[in-house]
Length: 632
Ligand code: COA
Ligand code: AMP
Image (cartoon, rainbow, N blue to C red):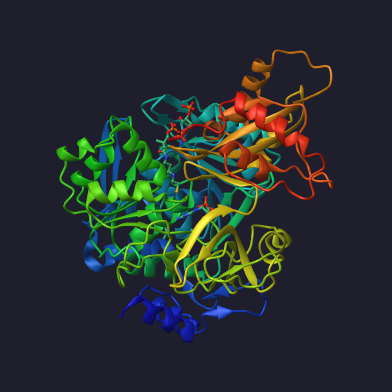
């Protein structure tokens, strides 16, 4: 059956479609009803079913005789170590940690924050939570203490799982001092911090709440998997919104599993037993869905890679992993390919490796420029598929469903809507625009299983951020167009979110930090085009009257503040000091217009601008900083 038939099948009977696919999983109580719409717009999927994610991802493979199959390959060029973990041994590790959690008083619905580097114990912690119904919230290891504290305050975890350190090519990142600082900053105090000591840099466990990971599980007795209601939250994952306050995306258990299970064959075209590698980080949604849960649900071997696309040790790093483990499908961000291409434009490194097992390369996280796709196609000689999704949805909204039918290549497009998603491109008044015309991309409610039903403890924000602009639709925050063939092209964000190396950052959050500099009166952060990272943040800053401090020093200090308070991934490309910022007559800063000036893109001066002359001043300041850059 081809894509259009499958999509029509879903359209004709959405609930029947998902109920049928739900059968692929092991349920304690099979759901009778797929969708509960009584509390619309807060929808629930499979609410009357009872299921456990850890059982489906781990235990059932052991029960069905696959205990000796490798579940996790850990490959860490930064520590020069490798490890394989079978489903049986994963089950033991997960169950013991879950036992430790039960002994320390955690129970269903409690929260656990996981702030860890890319080591197998991070997945063990996620699965241990799922085993007993504890809601995990993973915080990306590259976030600074303040960001961790914000998430601790919102999720209110009883326990935090962490490690003594992470390893970046630039050196060791000591997590424990960051965790201690976060706990000190946070109003909510977790009862315990469980620390995995790493040989590269152990830490002192000197606070009353600190517990060594091995001690925590020493006397633990492994509990069975606990059946949970289908809409029990499996996890909360914070993502950037337009303000400094991140949004806690809630992911219910059953819908997540049904949708992810469906995608592994239908989108990624892998069979049980094959090796699947999502080269991301467990701190991001891709890591949740495609490093941890999805591949394990379908009994694939997942790769936990602690390294970079380049520099660990060279631009052949990805090709080595693909060769060494006979990886069938790779999922990465375009920025990783651009980094490899920058270091090895002719892909000479490929000659050292055998990539014959690789069938498809999938890209997501940011717009995949056709140039990068063509480079990868030319050298890898496999289909290179862009697909589009968000933390909110947890799986692809649009893509090329290779396992159903490989649609012809269309560079620049994220392909077609997946079953479950009814996509519309709308104008500002909510009317559908003609094909080929740019507009806001919205999805008709209800969203499919696996997506978010609301924000953690913030129903009102869920409505106001996503549902109010286009009644009856979820507003994706992305702009683009659809062609005559229903192919979608994602072109830009419609809000103040920027995308740096596949990482989503809020310009509002960056501004909040910069404005805390004592000499700064006002500032605007914009995303400017970057040949490697897609976008990088640039700050334009107005100083307080009478400030005479060296301007260069202020710029450096602003950047340091951002790195310390948000994290090094958010470092500014440049900080410019300007006299005034362009605003509308109602006082709204014209960030989009400034971004266009910085990128050298033509723009219309907004009719609502207060003083058009300021745009010339901004142009001069940006030119002094080297923008528009010659990216050719
Ligand atoms: N823990 C601590 N620090 C981290 C970190 C982590 N997990 N991840 C990144 N950082 C730090 C880096 O050490 C670096 O710090 P520095 O400025 O002090 O050297 C800073 O954050 C920026 O790192 P990064 O974004 O990795 O940029 P880079 O220039 O070092 O590398 C790429 C560029 C393209 C190689 C890199 O961004 C990359 O691998 N991108 C792929 C990202 C990805 O897979 N995204 C998918 C999300 S779905
Ligand atoms: P995140 O929630 O961090 O995964 O970021 C989601 C955002 O990344 C989307 O809203 C898009 O702006 C962008 N994005 C993700 N995938 C794509 C893609 N394939 N093409 C263009 N933009 C993408």
